[in-house]
Length: 438
Ligand SMILES: Cc1ncc(COP(=O)(O)O)c(C=O)c1O
Image 1 (cartoon, rainbow, N blue to C red):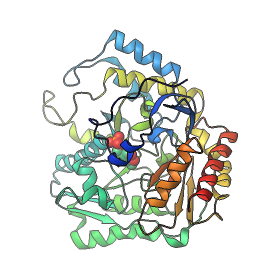
Image 2 (image 1 turned 90 degrees about the vertical axis):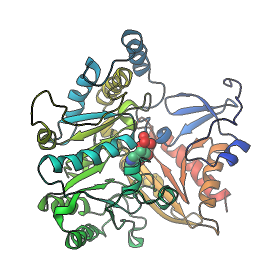
Image 3 (image 1 turned 45 degrees about the horizontal axis):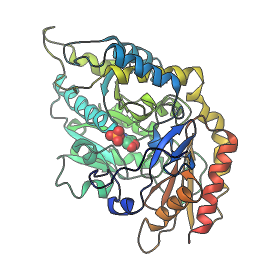
Protein backbone atom coordinates (compact mmCIF):
# COMPACT_ATOMS: atom_id res chain seq x y z
CA UNK A 1 0.00 0.00 0.00
CA UNK A 2 1.49 3.34 -0.90
CA UNK A 3 0.40 6.65 0.61
CA UNK A 4 -0.90 9.94 -0.77
CA UNK A 5 0.41 11.18 -4.13
CA UNK A 6 3.68 13.01 -3.80
CA UNK A 7 3.34 16.80 -3.56
CA UNK A 8 5.75 19.12 -5.34
CA UNK A 9 8.82 19.81 -3.28
CA UNK A 10 9.84 23.31 -4.34
CA UNK A 11 8.21 25.58 -1.80
CA UNK A 12 9.07 23.91 1.50
CA UNK A 13 12.47 25.16 2.73
CA UNK A 14 13.48 22.20 4.82
CA UNK A 15 15.21 22.57 8.20
CA UNK A 16 18.70 21.18 8.80
CA UNK A 17 18.53 19.48 5.41
CA UNK A 18 20.60 19.51 2.23
CA UNK A 19 17.56 20.79 0.32
CA UNK A 20 18.90 20.31 -3.20
CA UNK A 21 20.21 16.83 -2.48
CA UNK A 22 16.98 15.79 -0.75
CA UNK A 23 14.76 17.15 -3.50
CA UNK A 24 16.68 15.24 -6.14
CA UNK A 25 15.76 11.98 -4.37
CA UNK A 26 13.15 12.67 -1.66
CA UNK A 27 12.93 10.32 1.31
CA UNK A 28 9.24 10.63 2.04
CA UNK A 29 7.44 8.96 4.93
CA UNK A 30 3.68 8.67 4.66
CA UNK A 31 2.53 6.69 7.69
CA UNK A 32 3.79 5.07 10.86
CA UNK A 33 2.80 2.39 13.35
CA UNK A 34 4.66 1.08 16.39
CA UNK A 35 8.30 0.49 15.33
CA UNK A 36 7.84 1.24 11.63
CA UNK A 37 7.42 4.04 9.17
CA UNK A 38 6.02 3.41 5.71
CA UNK A 39 7.76 4.98 2.74
CA UNK A 40 5.96 6.49 -0.23
CA UNK A 41 6.69 3.34 -2.24
CA UNK A 42 4.88 1.27 0.40
CA UNK A 43 8.06 -0.20 1.94
CA UNK A 44 8.12 -0.45 5.74
CA UNK A 45 11.12 1.15 7.44
CA UNK A 46 12.30 0.20 10.92
CA UNK A 47 12.59 3.35 13.02
CA UNK A 48 16.03 3.37 14.61
CA UNK A 49 15.81 6.98 15.79
CA UNK A 50 12.34 7.46 17.35
CA UNK A 51 11.75 9.93 14.55
CA UNK A 52 14.05 12.65 15.84
CA UNK A 53 14.62 11.32 19.37
CA UNK A 54 10.99 11.88 20.29
CA UNK A 55 8.64 8.97 19.56
CA UNK A 56 9.73 7.00 22.62
CA UNK A 57 6.50 5.00 23.03
CA UNK A 58 6.41 4.00 19.37
CA UNK A 59 4.24 5.36 16.57
CA UNK A 60 0.52 5.73 16.16
CA UNK A 61 -0.41 5.09 19.78
CA UNK A 62 -4.18 5.04 19.88
CA UNK A 63 -4.49 6.45 23.40
CA UNK A 64 -2.64 9.60 22.34
CA UNK A 65 -4.67 9.96 19.15
CA UNK A 66 -7.92 9.67 21.09
CA UNK A 67 -6.84 12.11 23.80
CA UNK A 68 -5.87 14.67 21.15
CA UNK A 69 -9.14 14.20 19.24
CA UNK A 70 -11.22 14.57 22.40
CA UNK A 71 -9.33 17.64 23.56
CA UNK A 72 -9.67 19.35 20.19
CA UNK A 73 -13.40 18.73 20.25
CA UNK A 74 -13.78 19.95 23.84
CA UNK A 75 -11.42 22.94 24.12
CA UNK A 76 -9.27 23.67 21.10
CA UNK A 77 -7.40 26.62 22.58
CA UNK A 78 -7.44 28.77 25.67
CA UNK A 79 -5.33 31.87 26.27
CA UNK A 80 -2.15 31.08 28.17
CA UNK A 81 -1.71 34.48 29.83
CA UNK A 82 -3.87 35.38 32.86
CA UNK A 83 -6.20 32.47 31.99
CA UNK A 84 -6.07 28.77 32.68
CA UNK A 85 -7.47 25.43 31.61
CA UNK A 86 -7.02 22.11 33.40
CA UNK A 87 -4.59 20.24 31.10
CA UNK A 88 -1.24 21.90 31.87
CA UNK A 89 -1.98 22.06 35.61
CA UNK A 90 -2.65 18.34 35.71
CA UNK A 91 0.29 17.52 33.48
CA UNK A 92 2.69 19.61 35.58
CA UNK A 93 1.50 17.91 38.80
CA UNK A 94 2.08 14.51 37.28
CA UNK A 95 5.40 15.30 35.63
CA UNK A 96 7.06 16.63 38.77
CA UNK A 97 6.51 13.26 40.44
CA UNK A 98 9.11 11.92 37.99
CA UNK A 99 11.50 14.85 38.27
CA UNK A 100 14.49 14.86 40.62
CA UNK A 101 13.74 15.95 44.19
CA UNK A 102 13.11 19.64 44.58
CA UNK A 103 12.30 20.39 40.92
CA UNK A 104 8.60 20.88 41.47
CA UNK A 105 7.72 23.71 39.11
CA UNK A 106 7.09 23.42 35.36
CA UNK A 107 7.09 26.19 32.75
CA UNK A 108 5.66 24.98 29.43
CA UNK A 109 7.06 25.89 26.02
CA UNK A 110 6.63 24.43 22.52
CA UNK A 111 10.06 23.05 21.72
CA UNK A 112 13.48 22.24 23.02
CA UNK A 113 14.87 25.52 21.70
CA UNK A 114 12.24 27.50 23.56
CA UNK A 115 12.89 25.46 26.69
CA UNK A 116 16.58 26.32 26.54
CA UNK A 117 16.02 30.04 26.01
CA UNK A 118 13.41 29.98 28.78
CA UNK A 119 15.79 28.28 31.22
CA UNK A 120 18.60 30.73 30.42
CA UNK A 121 16.24 33.68 30.95
CA UNK A 122 14.93 32.23 34.21
CA UNK A 123 18.52 31.77 35.41
CA UNK A 124 19.42 35.39 34.62
CA UNK A 125 16.24 36.75 36.15
CA UNK A 126 16.60 34.56 39.25
CA UNK A 127 19.90 36.20 40.15
CA UNK A 128 18.38 39.61 39.58
CA UNK A 129 15.48 38.77 41.88
CA UNK A 130 18.05 38.07 44.58
CA UNK A 131 19.93 41.31 44.03
CA UNK A 132 22.76 39.66 42.08
CA UNK A 133 22.03 41.16 38.68
CA UNK A 134 25.76 41.22 37.87
CA UNK A 135 25.62 37.46 37.39
CA UNK A 136 25.07 37.53 33.63
CA UNK A 137 27.69 35.18 32.22
CA UNK A 138 26.47 31.89 30.75
CA UNK A 139 28.66 28.83 30.32
CA UNK A 140 28.01 26.10 27.76
CA UNK A 141 30.24 23.36 26.43
CA UNK A 142 31.94 22.60 23.14
CA UNK A 143 29.93 20.15 21.02
CA UNK A 144 26.78 21.00 23.00
CA UNK A 145 23.50 21.33 21.12
CA UNK A 146 20.86 23.47 22.75
CA UNK A 147 18.52 24.19 19.88
CA UNK A 148 18.48 27.14 17.54
CA UNK A 149 17.30 30.18 19.47
CA UNK A 150 19.90 32.91 19.93
CA UNK A 151 20.44 31.82 23.52
CA UNK A 152 20.73 28.19 22.54
CA UNK A 153 23.24 28.74 19.75
CA UNK A 154 25.26 31.09 21.95
CA UNK A 155 25.76 28.48 24.67
CA UNK A 156 25.83 25.67 22.09
CA UNK A 157 29.16 24.43 20.87
CA UNK A 158 28.63 23.38 17.25
CA UNK A 159 30.42 25.64 14.82
CA UNK A 160 28.03 25.20 11.87
CA UNK A 161 25.10 26.28 14.02
CA UNK A 162 26.86 29.46 15.11
CA UNK A 163 29.12 30.89 12.45
CA UNK A 164 26.47 32.23 10.05
CA UNK A 165 24.66 34.23 12.68
CA UNK A 166 26.88 37.02 13.90
CA UNK A 167 28.35 37.75 17.29
CA UNK A 168 25.54 36.07 19.33
CA UNK A 169 25.13 36.67 23.08
CA UNK A 170 27.88 38.48 24.94
CA UNK A 171 29.55 36.95 27.94
CA UNK A 172 29.36 33.29 27.02
CA UNK A 173 32.18 30.80 27.61
CA UNK A 174 32.47 27.12 26.79
CA UNK A 175 33.86 24.23 28.78
CA UNK A 176 35.91 21.77 26.79
CA UNK A 177 33.93 18.85 25.37
CA UNK A 178 34.30 15.41 26.91
CA UNK A 179 34.93 13.26 23.85
CA UNK A 180 38.37 11.84 24.57
CA UNK A 181 40.26 9.53 22.22
CA UNK A 182 41.26 7.35 25.13
CA UNK A 183 37.59 6.65 25.84
CA UNK A 184 36.92 5.18 22.38
CA UNK A 185 34.82 2.00 22.43
CA UNK A 186 33.90 2.45 26.10
CA UNK A 187 30.69 0.67 27.01
CA UNK A 188 28.38 3.06 28.76
CA UNK A 189 30.03 5.65 30.99
CA UNK A 190 33.70 6.19 30.04
CA UNK A 191 36.37 6.35 32.72
CA UNK A 192 38.50 9.30 31.69
CA UNK A 193 37.68 12.96 31.84
CA UNK A 194 36.01 13.92 35.14
CA UNK A 195 38.69 16.57 35.57
CA UNK A 196 37.38 18.41 32.48
CA UNK A 197 34.72 19.81 34.79
CA UNK A 198 37.53 21.79 36.43
CA UNK A 199 37.47 24.08 33.38
CA UNK A 200 34.72 25.78 35.30
CA UNK A 201 37.13 26.56 38.13
CA UNK A 202 39.38 28.28 35.58
CA UNK A 203 36.50 30.39 34.31
CA UNK A 204 35.58 31.29 37.86
CA UNK A 205 39.18 32.29 38.52
CA UNK A 206 39.24 34.38 35.35
CA UNK A 207 35.87 36.16 35.58
CA UNK A 208 34.82 35.83 39.23
CA UNK A 209 32.01 33.53 40.32
CA UNK A 210 29.84 36.56 41.03
CA UNK A 211 29.60 37.26 37.27
CA UNK A 212 28.41 33.76 36.32
CA UNK A 213 24.69 32.99 36.17
CA UNK A 214 24.52 29.42 34.95
CA UNK A 215 26.19 26.44 33.34
CA UNK A 216 24.23 24.43 30.80
CA UNK A 217 25.17 20.95 29.58
CA UNK A 218 23.48 17.95 28.07
CA UNK A 219 24.03 15.10 30.57
CA UNK A 220 24.70 12.93 27.50
CA UNK A 221 25.54 15.01 24.44
CA UNK A 222 23.00 13.72 21.92
CA UNK A 223 22.85 15.55 18.61
CA UNK A 224 26.60 15.67 18.17
CA UNK A 225 26.69 11.88 18.26
CA UNK A 226 25.96 10.45 21.73
CA UNK A 227 28.78 11.31 24.10
CA UNK A 228 28.07 9.92 27.59
CA UNK A 229 29.62 11.88 30.48
CA UNK A 230 32.88 10.62 31.98
CA UNK A 231 32.41 8.93 35.36
CA UNK A 232 32.20 11.60 38.07
CA UNK A 233 32.07 14.54 35.62
CA UNK A 234 28.50 15.68 36.24
CA UNK A 235 28.88 15.39 40.02
CA UNK A 236 32.01 17.52 39.82
CA UNK A 237 30.16 20.19 37.84
CA UNK A 238 27.43 20.06 40.45
CA UNK A 239 29.88 20.47 43.31
CA UNK A 240 31.62 23.44 41.73
CA UNK A 241 28.41 25.22 40.71
CA UNK A 242 26.88 24.72 44.16
CA UNK A 243 29.97 25.98 45.90
CA UNK A 244 29.88 29.21 43.87
CA UNK A 245 26.15 29.93 43.72
CA UNK A 246 26.02 29.20 39.96
CA UNK A 247 22.89 27.51 38.62
CA UNK A 248 23.29 24.18 36.85
CA UNK A 249 21.00 23.46 33.91
CA UNK A 250 20.69 20.00 32.41
CA UNK A 251 19.38 20.05 28.87
CA UNK A 252 17.38 16.83 28.80
CA UNK A 253 15.49 17.40 25.58
CA UNK A 254 16.89 14.08 24.38
CA UNK A 255 17.85 12.30 27.61
CA UNK A 256 14.47 12.87 29.29
CA UNK A 257 11.42 10.64 28.82
CA UNK A 258 13.22 7.38 29.57
CA UNK A 259 16.01 7.50 26.99
CA UNK A 260 18.65 6.48 29.53
CA UNK A 261 16.63 4.28 31.86
CA UNK A 262 14.92 6.81 34.12
CA UNK A 263 12.47 9.62 33.43
CA UNK A 264 15.47 11.98 33.50
CA UNK A 265 19.21 11.42 33.11
CA UNK A 266 19.61 13.44 36.31
CA UNK A 267 18.01 10.55 38.13
CA UNK A 268 20.04 7.94 36.31
CA UNK A 269 23.30 9.71 37.20
CA UNK A 270 22.19 10.76 40.69
CA UNK A 271 23.01 14.43 40.10
CA UNK A 272 20.30 17.02 40.72
CA UNK A 273 20.56 20.22 38.66
CA UNK A 274 18.60 23.41 39.37
CA UNK A 275 16.79 23.55 36.04
CA UNK A 276 15.99 20.87 33.47
CA UNK A 277 14.90 21.53 29.90
CA UNK A 278 12.80 18.97 28.07
CA UNK A 279 10.61 18.52 24.96
CA UNK A 280 10.42 15.78 22.31
CA UNK A 281 9.33 12.65 24.24
CA UNK A 282 7.04 14.71 26.46
CA UNK A 283 4.21 14.16 23.97
CA UNK A 284 5.79 11.23 22.14
CA UNK A 285 6.42 13.71 19.33
CA UNK A 286 2.69 13.87 18.56
CA UNK A 287 2.14 17.56 19.35
CA UNK A 288 4.92 20.13 19.86
CA UNK A 289 5.57 20.77 23.54
CA UNK A 290 8.52 21.61 25.74
CA UNK A 291 8.93 22.16 29.45
CA UNK A 292 11.39 23.67 31.89
CA UNK A 293 11.53 22.08 35.33
CA UNK A 294 12.66 24.51 38.00
CA UNK A 295 13.78 24.02 41.57
CA UNK A 296 11.36 25.38 44.15
CA UNK A 297 13.93 27.86 45.43
CA UNK A 298 14.24 29.39 41.95
CA UNK A 299 10.50 29.73 41.49
CA UNK A 300 10.05 31.07 45.02
CA UNK A 301 12.63 33.80 44.47
CA UNK A 302 10.25 35.32 41.89
CA UNK A 303 7.22 35.24 44.18
CA UNK A 304 7.69 38.59 45.85
CA UNK A 305 6.19 42.07 45.60
CA UNK A 306 2.46 42.67 45.29
CA UNK A 307 0.33 39.66 44.37
CA UNK A 308 -1.01 41.58 41.38
CA UNK A 309 2.47 41.76 39.84
CA UNK A 310 3.38 39.45 36.97
CA UNK A 311 6.47 37.69 38.29
CA UNK A 312 8.11 36.56 35.04
CA UNK A 313 7.71 38.53 31.83
CA UNK A 314 8.06 35.53 29.60
CA UNK A 315 5.79 33.00 27.92
CA UNK A 316 4.37 31.80 24.61
CA UNK A 317 0.91 31.98 23.06
CA UNK A 318 0.92 28.20 23.10
CA UNK A 319 2.52 27.58 26.53
CA UNK A 320 0.61 24.61 27.96
CA UNK A 321 -1.60 24.34 24.88
CA UNK A 322 -4.63 22.18 25.73
CA UNK A 323 -4.00 19.73 22.87
CA UNK A 324 -0.32 19.37 23.73
CA UNK A 325 -1.21 18.87 27.39
CA UNK A 326 -3.72 16.17 26.46
CA UNK A 327 -1.06 14.45 24.35
CA UNK A 328 1.39 14.81 27.25
CA UNK A 329 -1.01 13.23 29.73
CA UNK A 330 -1.81 10.32 27.44
CA UNK A 331 1.90 9.84 26.75
CA UNK A 332 2.72 9.83 30.45
CA UNK A 333 0.00 7.22 31.02
CA UNK A 334 1.71 5.01 28.45
CA UNK A 335 5.19 5.53 29.87
CA UNK A 336 3.94 4.67 33.36
CA UNK A 337 1.67 1.78 32.41
CA UNK A 338 4.21 0.09 30.16
CA UNK A 339 7.24 0.78 32.37
CA UNK A 340 8.93 2.56 29.47
CA UNK A 341 11.11 4.87 31.60
CA UNK A 342 12.90 1.76 32.88
CA UNK A 343 12.95 -0.17 29.64
CA UNK A 344 16.16 1.24 28.24
CA UNK A 345 17.95 0.15 31.39
CA UNK A 346 16.57 -3.35 30.97
CA UNK A 347 17.78 -3.45 27.36
CA UNK A 348 21.04 -1.61 27.92
CA UNK A 349 23.35 -4.64 28.01
CA UNK A 350 21.69 -6.25 25.02
CA UNK A 351 21.87 -2.97 23.13
CA UNK A 352 25.53 -2.45 23.99
CA UNK A 353 26.39 -6.00 22.94
CA UNK A 354 24.69 -5.54 19.57
CA UNK A 355 26.24 -2.14 18.87
CA UNK A 356 29.76 -3.10 19.87
CA UNK A 357 29.59 -6.15 17.57
CA UNK A 358 30.27 -3.58 14.80
CA UNK A 359 33.64 -2.56 16.19
CA UNK A 360 35.78 -4.53 13.72
CA UNK A 361 33.99 -3.32 10.60
CA UNK A 362 35.85 -1.08 8.14
CA UNK A 363 36.41 2.57 9.06
CA UNK A 364 34.75 2.27 12.48
CA UNK A 365 36.60 4.70 14.72
CA UNK A 366 34.48 4.60 17.87
CA UNK A 367 31.26 3.15 19.29
CA UNK A 368 29.42 4.72 22.22
CA UNK A 369 26.28 3.76 24.12
CA UNK A 370 24.16 4.54 27.16
CA UNK A 371 20.53 3.57 27.83
CA UNK A 372 18.89 3.16 24.42
CA UNK A 373 21.18 5.63 22.69
CA UNK A 374 24.16 4.66 20.63
CA UNK A 375 26.57 5.94 18.03
CA UNK A 376 29.01 4.52 15.53
CA UNK A 377 31.64 6.96 14.34
CA UNK A 378 33.63 6.48 11.13
CA UNK A 379 36.93 7.78 9.86
CA UNK A 380 36.06 10.68 7.58
CA UNK A 381 36.86 10.69 3.88
CA UNK A 382 38.41 13.82 2.36
CA UNK A 383 35.00 15.46 2.61
CA UNK A 384 33.80 15.25 6.19
CA UNK A 385 30.33 13.76 6.54
CA UNK A 386 30.26 11.97 3.20
CA UNK A 387 30.84 8.49 4.57
CA UNK A 388 28.28 8.98 7.36
CA UNK A 389 25.69 10.15 4.86
CA UNK A 390 26.36 7.19 2.56
CA UNK A 391 25.83 4.75 5.43
CA UNK A 392 22.59 6.51 6.42
CA UNK A 393 21.44 6.51 2.78
CA UNK A 394 22.20 2.81 2.35
CA UNK A 395 20.41 1.95 5.60
CA UNK A 396 17.31 3.81 4.42
CA UNK A 397 17.03 2.57 0.83
CA UNK A 398 18.62 -0.88 1.03
CA UNK A 399 18.28 -1.79 4.71
CA UNK A 400 14.82 -0.26 5.17
CA UNK A 401 15.91 1.29 8.47
CA UNK A 402 15.94 4.88 9.62
CA UNK A 403 19.20 5.98 11.23
CA UNK A 404 20.54 9.47 11.78
CA UNK A 405 23.83 10.81 10.51
CA UNK A 406 25.63 13.70 12.02
CA UNK A 407 28.87 14.25 10.12
CA UNK A 408 30.52 10.82 10.09
CA UNK A 409 28.61 9.45 13.04
CA UNK A 410 25.50 7.31 12.84
CA UNK A 411 23.34 7.89 15.91
CA UNK A 412 20.65 5.46 17.00
CA UNK A 413 17.84 5.96 19.52
CA UNK A 414 15.00 3.55 18.76
CA UNK A 415 11.58 3.72 20.39
CA UNK A 416 11.69 2.20 23.87
CA UNK A 417 9.23 -0.49 22.75
CA UNK A 418 11.84 -2.09 20.49
CA UNK A 419 12.12 -5.89 20.80
CA UNK A 420 15.39 -7.76 21.06
CA UNK A 421 14.96 -9.21 17.58
CA UNK A 422 14.34 -5.71 16.20
CA UNK A 423 17.59 -4.57 17.83
CA UNK A 424 19.33 -7.34 15.89
CA UNK A 425 17.54 -6.31 12.70
CA UNK A 426 18.58 -2.69 13.12
CA UNK A 427 22.20 -3.49 13.85
CA UNK A 428 22.39 -6.02 11.05
CA UNK A 429 21.09 -3.44 8.55
CA UNK A 430 23.71 -1.02 9.81
CA UNK A 431 26.43 -3.66 9.51
CA UNK A 432 25.46 -4.36 5.91
CA UNK A 433 25.53 -0.66 5.11
CA UNK A 434 28.95 -0.20 6.68
CA UNK A 435 30.29 -3.13 4.67
CA UNK A 436 28.70 -1.88 1.44
CA UNK A 437 29.92 1.71 1.75
CA UNK A 438 33.60 2.23 1.32
C1 LIG B 1 19.69 18.72 23.82
C2 LIG B 1 18.78 19.48 22.92
N1 LIG B 1 18.37 20.69 23.26
C3 LIG B 1 17.53 21.40 22.49
C4 LIG B 1 17.07 20.89 21.31
C5 LIG B 1 16.16 21.71 20.45
O1 LIG B 1 14.91 21.16 20.40
P1 LIG B 1 13.87 21.64 19.27
O2 LIG B 1 14.37 21.13 17.97
O3 LIG B 1 12.57 21.01 19.72
O4 LIG B 1 13.81 23.12 19.33
C6 LIG B 1 17.46 19.63 20.91
C7 LIG B 1 16.99 19.04 19.65
O5 LIG B 1 17.46 18.04 19.18
C8 LIG B 1 18.35 18.89 21.73
O6 LIG B 1 18.79 17.69 21.37
